[in-house]
Image 1 (cartoon, rainbow over the protein chains, first blue to last red):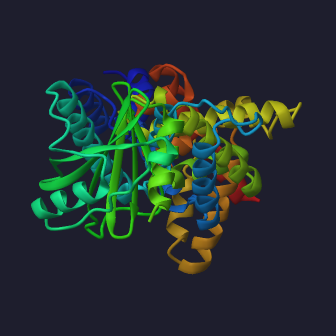
Image 2 (tube, rainbow over the protein chains, first blue to last red):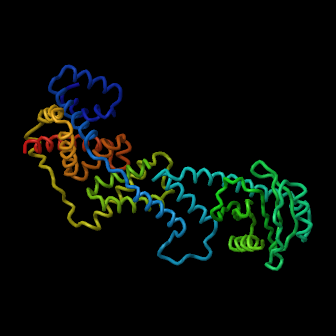
Image 3 (tube, rainbow over the protein chains, first blue to last red):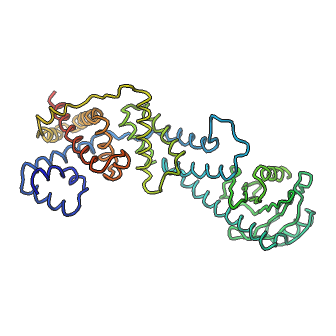
Length: 259
Length: 168
């Protein structure tokens, strides 16, 4: 390798971006050529000067906070300029939340615990959806068929180590059809079955483990089913239905305020 | 907050102004959030830095009609060639450590901030973020060969600048 070739490759040699063969060739030339070696030393001196002495400007804490707030805001209101669309589907909102978490992770890597709890929620949402689908497909939706809350509640309580609230929502348009047992998150859970016109709503209930994020309602959607999740009075609630998301939200509100 | 720091450092060295750097990073993060679908899951830092760079150039076009910075005289550089003074400067560094350290930091920062945009960005990505040629090529949207030649020219310009400053 001659001087000209060596000098062309000097930077890449310094940056360890050369293939093995070239590294050996450049190294051999530098050993025997004082002028090229001097150039190499100059290159590495400027590199180390920049690395050691150039100021690195990390983001301030206030900037990090502003960005987190901004992403959270964008997740809630995707189009700031336009009025909110009434019929924005739930899955869309869930996707928004998902990408907010992903973006926050890439940008600030602060949301790891949130991500963990979200993926935990997603796993449970998956089980809820499977439980609902299985019940529909096998026509085994109801273990105890009754529109009477005073029949359903004792039956569930006798099979479980807790007693779920069985609300009468007939006047709200959600008549009780019955209840059944299911198995979610490695434990037996209560399922209340409500109707709304031709639709069926399964409401899964079990005691809070105290770890679950109880701050707000979360929504998911999959395979044409909408899922709502909230915590109240020490209980975790998951409602699943092929009902549209707005009606499912109404159901959740009525149920929550019935107590 | 590794990537946010990288984003801010890069934006700072592109804009060379703390307030503008913060604005650019904030805008870039919002874009990152909106275009998260375009992230292939491979290298989050490089992906975010590419967005920061795009945001910077959009901002630059909007705010400054004249984007000429203090350009180096490359012909003068070619005439002078290299100089060993840079190494002497390193030796004198040990005489009065704290003073020299602060002073050399100022020299290096000034030299870096006066590099033309094209050269400054590759140097910052290489020396401060220690990114590979491949990642730099992705972020700056230039071939690897161009990364190589720009780095080489940037280093020559920095050498020249540090030598000139020292002689003042």
